[in-house]
Image (cartoon, rainbow, N blue to C red):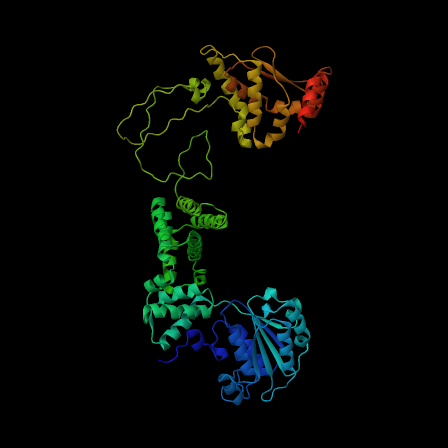
Length: 592
């Protein structure tokens, strides 16, 4: 039985032209070899498995090649190339900085730089994972790296450029290696499969390429694993089974169900996925990537941005025709918010379920809400539609005047209801207090505020007709003050300053049922006068008395009195009653 060699080593590139996905970098290195314009130090940085060490070895071989080709490639025929290919070259040294990161190791390397090459032109030192060197080792390396002998070239490779000292970076030519695209990885895997006589499905190679995340070494390792599992015939289903990858069909189904507002079916699908061992975070991230791809497929210009197979690209384009852009935008926002909150959530599955329910309700029409109750934008809509709901029949007809002047709904006894057979849904009848004049709860827009004066005139005429039909209710000073404070609390946000000042004013009944408020300055009086009718209409409504008149006036000179703070009121109380001051000291209390 011959020794097995993994594909990542067996098919490792030996020339610049065979390197996958790094055309710009390999062209630069070949031109440097061809023209002889070589720097003394290079830094290759990038993710794992993208060809940093491979390019360093190819570059080192090309530098010492005795007969390089016209495009800067090594000839692979001279003594230097043959010695390198056979692993016995004395001019190329590799050092693993992860296990040789001390000052002593660097000093030993520096000693070797003093010996000129016996054959060839350059001594090339390849230091892999150079970011693992200690700070002391970096400092010991600085001087030699800046001014090495003419026959020495350093090639440093790292996956974490941010950990290298700036003084090292400034002495090197930096080459940033990029992740490989999915089509590039698929094309390379097809070549390997043909050489190994392995049959495959394009969708299966697409899954492997996506799983590799831009690294060719990872892709080849996964390819070997899958080829062993599939026994020479790589299929889409077997790849999903071996790698435990969530099938993209699940995401297509989720989006289709969400567009049809089938939240219950999505919950069933989600439960099946979780029972197969998939994590909620992976589901959310995968669905977000899927929705992003659908959005890219909406426009033919962005369709090539999808790093998927041609068959998958066609499926995305078909689903993009059914999915409106507002749905995709809102779905991405919800999924991104779920991903942010996932780690902090104590009930992660519930968070995922709520997010998917909200996604399924994006295109669902809003429920009919109570006119006076408003609607919370975060409230979930009804999950189940087209159900027969038995509604109680109205016990009696209510006139507009009775509805306007009657007590709140919770104070009125409700008529007994009878259980009946399921009937078609009956629209709800809402008794709203209309045409009674504006209140602060209804102040919303400037247009409404301009229409208040005309509306109040009509209300007052109607109320005059009803004075004789319905007796007015009695109220006291205490009830007046209570409704005054509640009115101030209900005032819109733009009146927050005026509401705070009105709270400090105590209304008094003058000539029942009329009441007045006394203010100490003309500016406040002017502000109150602008909303005088609104205040009167509100108090008439809350106190159930249509004869109320509201009179604001400016305080006379002998009526003005400075408003005392809480601290001043407490001190005045303590001076009048020594027992309170004694109690405060005994208990160690302080007013806040």
